[in-house]
Image 1 (cartoon, one colour):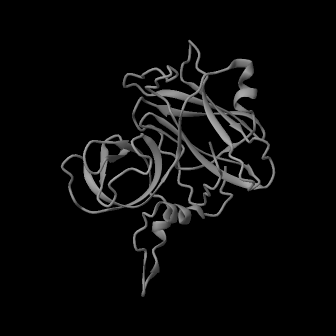
Image 2 (cartoon, helix red, strand yellow):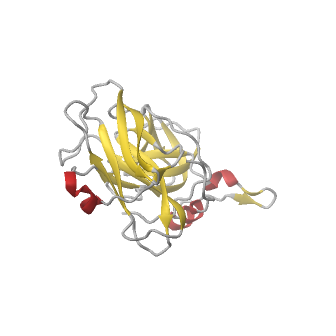
Image 3 (cartoon, one colour):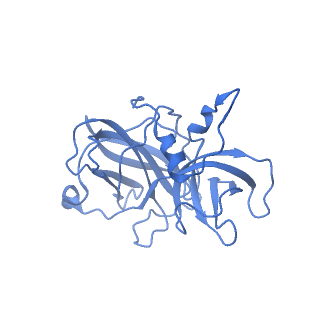
Amino acid sequence: MKKYMKWICAFSALITLGLATQSCSKNEGYDMSLLMPNAIVTLKPAEGTPSFYIQLDDNTTLEPVNILSSPIGDKEGRALMNFSETGQASEKYDRKVHVNWIRPVLTKDMVADAGDGNDGKYGSDPVEIADSWVNIAEDGYLTLQFLTYFGNSGIAHEVNLLNAGTESDPYIVEFRHNAHGDYSGSLASGIAAFRLDGLENGLGLPDTEGKTVDLTLKYKSYSGEKSIKFKYCTRKTTEPGKIDTGADYSLKLK
């Protein structure tokens, strides 16, 4: 899916969460690099101060030097982030960073496949999966950026991920979208992350035991049923995705 929307929401992320650093000077003007995320991360609770740490990739954990508590409290969840290196080592983590801003991403557990009741329970409204760097299977999550029509009506579009695995192939999931009647307007983009493993409701995918497997994502597009394959290894980063700097994450989700 090509770029459709202009980048606007980084401004709201900076204002809403109050994590912006000074981004301009009298001589140079605005530092535009601060307006775009440079990482998709997992925020994880921790003992002590700060009371959370940031999982950047399989091998890298970050300690924020300018934030003491997570914007999502004591929960674990995914987030877009813009950060700067400090060059400082951390006693507990791999290194210290300065967080310019964080925008939490809707993070949900998978839900049960209701069979013939899926349309009524979870919706069957179409989306397009964006060609975006945030589409990634890592750290036990599948994070997706998608596009759909949004009428700026304040209606929250509902998204879910079904465990649609079978006995012969347990690594199948299905993305479901319920627009709740909001079908007109302009194309807008949303991002949601879904926990794939270790779910208390028993719906998590089987542990791959260190192996990399094909994870099939099914979804309904505007041109019919489609599927995408991700490389998946439990709690590992296996799909780097592509950069999309023309994204707008203004879609209201639940």
